[in-house]
Amino acid sequence: MTIQWFPGHMAKARRELEVRLPQVDFVLEIADARAPAASRNPSLARMLSGKLHLLVLNKADLASPLMTDQWLRSLRAEGMEAIAFSASADRPRKLLQPIQRLSSSRSAAKGLRLLVVGIPNVGKSAVINKLAGRRRTAVGARPGITRSQQWIRAAKNLMILDTPGILWPKFADQETGYKLAAIGAIRTEVLPLQEVALWLARRLQDLAPSTLMTTYDLPSDDLAAILPGIAKRRGLFLSGGKLNIEQAADVLLREYQQGKLGRVSLEQAEGEGTGL
Image 1 (cartoon, rainbow, N blue to C red):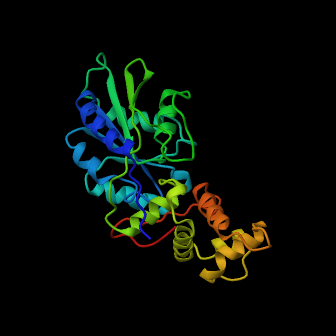
Image 2 (image 1 turned 45 degrees about the vertical axis):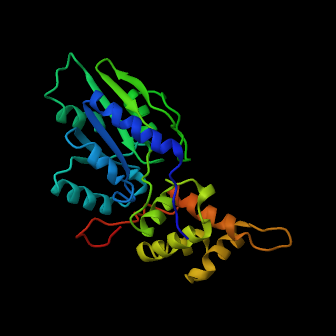
């Protein structure tokens, strides 16, 4: 089944972003550290060409530390300024230092106008709140919380432009769709939940073989038995005593997204070996 999600507000947001770009000095692009390639909108790279640019691999506290380090080495080798960050755990200074270093040629008196971009649910609003030192934008686990652009004053000489998350109209391959669905970048209402959950279970078996059996106390690692096993262990039943497989799929996806299955990344940097 094809996974696609490109509602009308995203097309509008992209047009508005193109209009705003000349007004900003610096771009903070947010991606998910568990899927650094899949969670970057390829059309943004073309739009941001020529702008001071820092890529932030957010949610690093949910990703494999080893694989995140590999990604950073790979990105920096390509000439990309990139850092790993956790909006829930790290201090603002970890972001502010590279921003200040990269924008040091700008006049301090004039201030810095910072644009924050990324796909849905990678933590843009959480990063902005961290920089602002207080809750200035709505934060949630559901993609699509931010629906309009807004300027936020983070400091005397720092203004931040928050933008809605923007996906692209068509994924290059279905694997990208599965990764984005697994990390929560696409609303569950439009997902084939069981299909995505089985993809995730298979990926977890490859990357962290004992995780599913240990977390859900499953008797075996048979892929076909994982969702029924989760439903049975969590007491998820439909009327008549039938196992609620759909709810079990939702549990697996949600608990992976929350980090309850450990720090597992879904993709590795090109040229790097698999590792956790």
